[in-house]
Length: 356
Image (cartoon, rainbow, N blue to C red; front, side, top):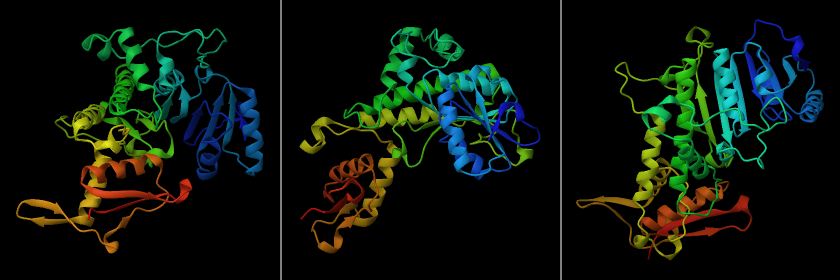
């Protein structure tokens, strides 16, 4: 690796903001030898660990280290990255990308820190240790003016949106919707302030979804990277510009999922189910079980009434607790018998069969 002063031009430059000890920058530098990878972090200790790890990887002439805050890095770059940049740090990364007219890939976390200033919460994103917040929320004019979103409204939204994968509550669809709306304010802000085309920004998620409790990803294809460089935007819209906003579409799906769950229709095992999946994920599992156990009739699809050992469908190992919980939920809703097998987490599976 090199220091920031050794940067040369001519290559696509990726900047890993708040890069920590190099969990993202090191593999990128190894996998993309024709790109420059700059790792920016405020903590000298983290950079020291990253340098030691880089030495263990061998010769990495395309890896560069920069000690300083997000706002202090002012070199030109093509793509800005942020993996779990805490609180307002994600917004400072988006600002840096907007000012550089660069693309961005950011996975936010700790959005509860975006609530009104709390002296007991360290922002860890500014140039000094004063801990004063540097971003005012909501950021977008759309939220402030058109939706009349106040700072107190945003505080409530941030509080609801700050949740982990396994909260153990049946209101996770509401929490998911709050997170989507919070990230939509971020995307609206970069469109308004930095000229990103609305068709070239998106909110998506990591796959598999249980790869991280904080699995949202903000994408923006800015001015710096264009089609002539062989790169395509994350999605595009029709010429008449009537394609639904993906953030709003997912929010509606989440609320529809929540409203479709009636506690009176659940069995005892479902009363405390944590609904932390999307309607699309539920549909895929339902289709999978329907293909296995369904048969067509004049009245529609019905399910086999007799259980047989040959009819037991065993889902593969390697599924996380969240996905297994979804399978149990769908199987119960479809009137199928279901149970778990395996003691250790890596060996656990879900078995499904028609009820006897």
